[in-house]
Amino acid sequence: MKKNLANIITLTRIFFVFIVVGLLYCKECQYSYQIALFLTAILMWFDGLDGFVARKLNISSKLGSLLDIMGDRIVENVFWIAFCALGWVNVCVPIIVLTRGIVTDSLRTLAFEQGYTAFGAKTMMQGKIAKFIVASNFCRFTYAVCKAVAFFFLIAGNMPIDYNCKALLLKIGIICTIISVAFCVLRGLPVIVESKRFFATEEK
Image (cartoon, rainbow, N blue to C red; front, side):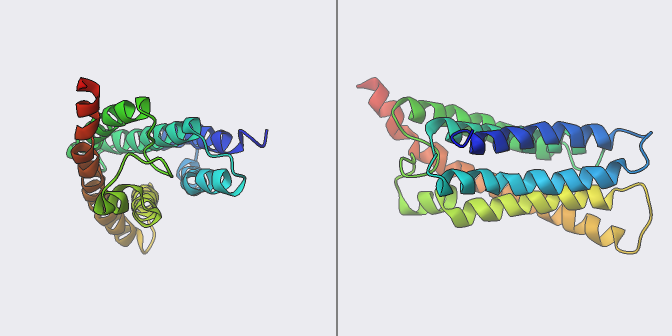
């Protein structure tokens, strides 16, 4: 159980995101949006908790790294697609995020085959700037917070009830969405640039 605790946390947040989206479309439940907000807060907290647990218990692994990235992709893609379908964000948002994810994850697969991981001690990033943008705890944390705030405030700002700061929360959600998309693209570029050496290795 201890060995798989971090992975269980990762899989739990994947499970939660589907419940949240279901609640956003559930018109029969009076408190569906409130429950959705609560679960969104939990699953975004879990986003950092799985990595913390893995490091704290010294149970980091390649499988855990892959599951973490997979969890991130599923959560953010499901949210952006659902928000787009609800009319909360422009269609460009899921298109950009999905395209970036497919490109970087494909390149990371090649790096994984050669013994590298996306983050951690065996990260595929070699340059200092690339490591900072893609693999540093600061940039990963900042990006995760931007997404979390965007997800939470977009839901809060679109709740089917009126309250004083609703417009302000929605505006914060939209601003964080723009920042998240820009961060998403910025963190994908070094992966593309540094992956060239793996193609060179393949050709030898």
